[in-house]
Amino acid sequence: MKTKLSFNLTMAIFLGLILGILFGLFMPGRYEGVLPVIDMIGSLYMNALRMMIYPLVFCSLIAGIQGIGSVSVTGRIGGQSVLYFTGTTFFASLLGLFLPKALGLGKGVAIEMMETDVEATQFTSLMDTLKNLIPANPVASFASGDMLQVLVFAIIVGITCLSLGEKAAPFVRVAEAVNHISIRIVSAVMYFTPIGVFCSIASVIYANGTSTIMALGAVLIALYVTMFLYALIVYGGIVRLIGKCDVRTFFVKVLPAALNAFGTCSSSATLPISKQCADDLEVPNEISSLTLPLGATINMDAVSIVMSFMIVFFANACGIEISFGMLAVVLLSNTLLSIGTPGVPGGAIASFAALSSIAGLPAGVMGVYISINTLCDMGATCCNVLGDIACSVAMKESVKKS
Image 1 (cartoon, one colour):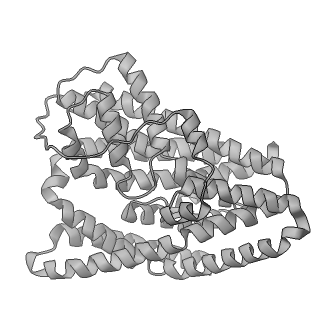
Image 2 (cartoon, rainbow, N blue to C red):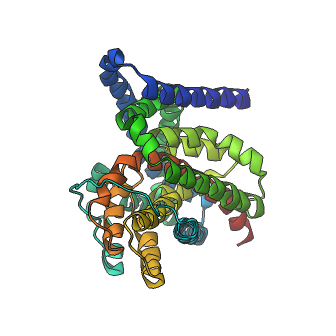
């Protein structure tokens, strides 16, 4: 019964996605009055998901650490997950540089550039990054939506509760109760996902228009094919070889999260649905509660593919030759910037501004990039979410062996 319900919901989400795309493309002028209503419903859906993200992440992580029952095992899961995400992001960035350069994408393409004012992401030193991991004010971290600081705070609290044992039991019971409440609310919101995806994608498509969609069709097709093959080969291989899970079963069960991510362009907002998909794949809560929010924060494989792809594309279109030395700098910078990109719609724009400046591209390319960012972001978010869940499946087996 649960499998049938999940299948029906997946089909409903997919139908909402298709209808939203068609509505956004062909919505006649006389129906423009419904656009504010669509935007409102889409915003309500996104807010309903976001409402439970931080209570779910914080309490689920504390409950998960108690379930592990060992500080050393918690460290192994976190450490292996960080290595996994860093390694796949580096490989994705390398692939994103190599393919468009080999294919010569952008050569002979005339681009009308638009000046735009975007503040580039600032590089910080490793020491600054480490210093900012510990929240001086945890309440402010929750309020500002700093997922990395919330994660660190939850891990500190969870490990402390584990070491205190019975003394911390009342707090742990409260955290477990809030976790169950959060899951129940998210389960209810899930039934409105087809409507939420329809409204989100319809607004995106209508705002961009058919002319924008068709203008850079070739590079978008190449980008989507690359992300599709990356997810199929890399994530499929990891799931099969490390996670000992059937590849077809994996991709079928993660469809709800993938489709929601595609429609909403937010890996953070998709976290509750990703958690349910991980549960369907029999990933223990103590693993998924740590790997999924960590992945939503630092796993930006597809974002690094997009940024590398577009750097080479714009360089070719502008007639700028990027040396192999500069490619190495772009590769390293892209990996670091991708990991720091927030898992929210448009989160990659500031990172791309910094990367294009490093690569020596004219400022005008930002206007073109912003015009297609959402179209790139939909596929990238979908791919990233698949990577988060693939990591959970892989950790389920690798932790057993360590």
